[in-house]
Amino acid sequence: MALKQFPATGIIAAYNKESTCNLSTEELTNMVQELDISLRIPYEMYYVGHPYQDIANTLKLPEVLVKHHILDARKELKLKIESRYIGVSASSFS
Image (cartoon, rainbow, N blue to C red; front, side):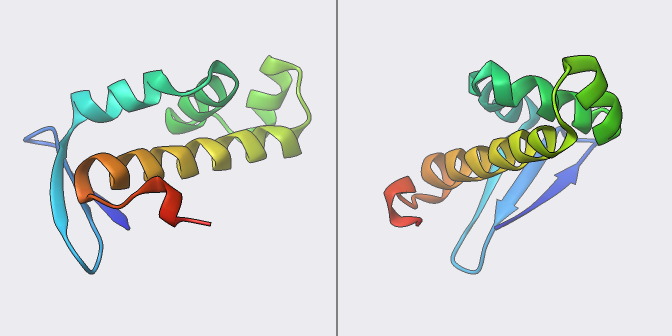
């Protein structure tokens, strides 16, 4: 699945080979807010441009753990988008 943002409209298109859907910035923000705090904070910091090392220093975590949390957050968001908007069951992923 890939995401393409259209800034003027606040719409993010999530698409794969089978289907396409439109996801508003507000909906994506809500999904991010639903993440566990241990994933959400590093993900949000990285999203706004903080480098891994700065995030690790701020949160007093090893850099490798910060990278792992960000990757897990991205995976969880992808599953949420696919299950809510593309009709793919999260249980179908291994």
